Length: 397
Image (cartoon, rainbow, N blue to C red; front, side):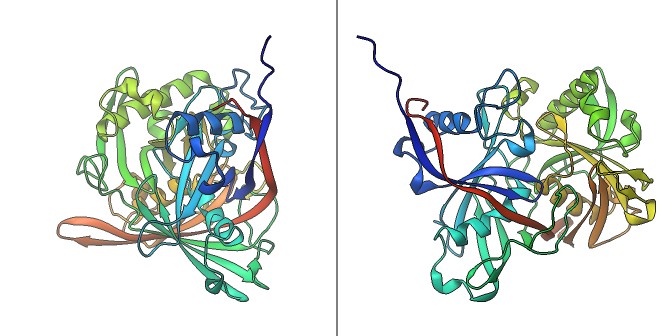
């Protein structure tokens, strides 16, 4: 007699927007026992939750939204790290392949970590004020960094509504201020913020050419290029690049060779298994353009223009971690980002992206012959979209 298909199981989960991203959040303790440890079972479960791999590229049979910004998962638990409240693990789920990338953080969803932790009992009740700001110290487990979130509280509950506006998000909400402490990578990829030891390198990319590039490990490993060197103006919107398969293939080739030069992978063939990092971004001097919302961005509104790719496509706004990289690079004289912003020393920049503008700050110091960044700062917002249980077939993992 044929065994009937396994029934669905339900797992406590919350669907949240953080910044310009959305993701499914779990408490570690709520996952099925087999998925509480890293490995194949956890990856298979998260793939099924999101609806991947999907050869149609739509994630119809899951919680994903068929873009890199909406194909995300988060697992939180009480922190095992002294001086921290929660451990935050981020999984970027591939849309069309059976792969979860654990190599980096999501800066946008970082804004939702504090609110979720407060609302789901991961902080002691006495830490939460009746009214005011609750400071949540987050250990970002993917990259081994500390993030401090300042979450507004009203009546003992997370305040989600407000008048803080973020380009790329349709409706205003409450502001969540984030501090990314010592955001530059000090381990992976050569052991320094600039893995080659240079603020600008010649990146040799077969079939593309030799490109001037700033290779930086800050927020997330990022390859910065000059827009003009690759035939762009820095005013492009998504369709200009995402609708051009040849352009996307060139960017992936650049990304793979940049990853090798940064020491993130040993061979370009490994790039396919490391889709989340590094990012590729290109910069340009301020130029007027019309954002995807129809908003006019004037040259005087910004210090520079930046466009960035995530998971093989031009991002609709800006990844939070890439914004940290932008702020860090802008603070260090001589990087391509700094030069596009006018050069010199600066503690903050406002840059133009496809959806509008964003301000990010960074505090940099020159110590012992090296630049060091003590923190990067930016504001985002977060909101619960749905909470309850997510359902998956019981035999999917």
